[in-house]
Length: 239
Length: 239
DNA sequence: TGTGTAAAGTTATCGGTGTAAAGATTTGAT
DNA sequence: ATCAAATCTTTACACCGATAACTTTACACA
Image 1 (tube, each protein chain N blue to C red):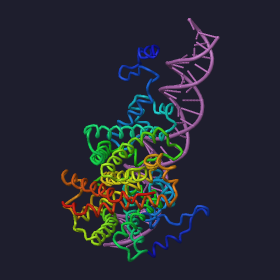
Image 2: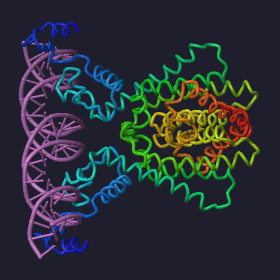
Image 3: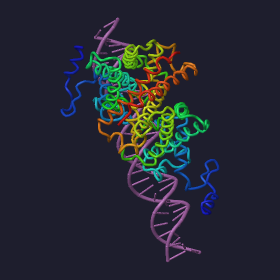
Image 4: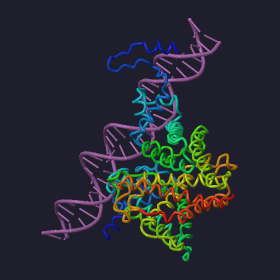
């Protein structure tokens, strides 16, 4: 690393365009960070290796020293994204340490939707894009599983709180049910499918134009249906 | 049209590459049909105007006589797709004309997932792709609303069958809840998110490797939770 | 029955993209 | 000190969406 510092000391040719090192030193990490930064404001569709390389200050094809192709970069971005989602969900629960299981299910649902809105393009990269099956990396699955485990634990506690069977199968099915509901709602809101569909004509205007209170109340009702459903159906959930 | 037929009679230059007409005559329709055919086997990401034009037998830029750009073509493909989805759902109900409301909710859920699997790339085009807000066409919304209306009617009947309030608000919220659940499950299965997440470790293997019976049973349980939830929460659903 | 205008399709071309191949530079182990 | 491996650059190619200027055809109107 001493040698690396020496490299930084080497002077550049032009004063305007100073390129102190031939070797970037941390290119792979920089590219992933830059990709995540890019997705803060622009969609995955608009992401290109060339602009990424330019922003990092490297030649267009330098990327290929660290990623086999564009797909592999996206794959690795996704792993980061899933980790970020898990941390986001954990943070939401940490803000209310003594929350009951049922309350935690609620908090997770809200947090999930918030993440999808705040990191909209990243969320799309996680759930509206899939690599070919054979290219999926175990690290990515690992990162993804964490999120669901958090939900699963909340569900199990909720089942216990209500004196319901909380063995593997009912816990799995209830988790999947809750996740599907929240994920579906999130996607439908994000893609604008709800506008003009369910509520157009039934409400005064589009869903996104409703007051936050109205949106909040609808969300609460959906989760009420979900939780009441789990309570009512739990004893029927046998493999 | 007589003149058009005359045009077809004009001989071509080479015998291998015969181009009988300068004017295609039905290009817009052909392009949309070809795009839908393309999505039968390949993803939206891989769809290009150039290959579309080539398949239809027309120059690369002829597309621009009928579509402002690639986005507009996709927009119109989506309108077709939503119509196809509505028809698919209607057809599923037509096969069981005397089904109860609750039964129809079930049938719609199954049909929705089947459509998403059979027309996977088209489904992605409908729900994982969105044009800029200002480019949305009313025809597309119209076509999309039809599907939800079918579900909404089933839900209303189901509410009536159970002596529950079936006015606008509870019907809307229940519809949204059911749609979200089915849509979320569909997306999670399609993107492979479920593999390795909820069931990895809790079941013997990945979800898609489960027997159809097992998958069916899980689906049934999810819908049981949903329907029981609506029944249990219906009286709480006030605006 | 011409005839001219607008619609429909073509060719040429531009900037941008992913990526393969070959060369230049740096690093680090021997 | 040297040399191979890793890293980055240069060059090049095929493909893509899109624009502009053109040719061809269709059709309304005289």
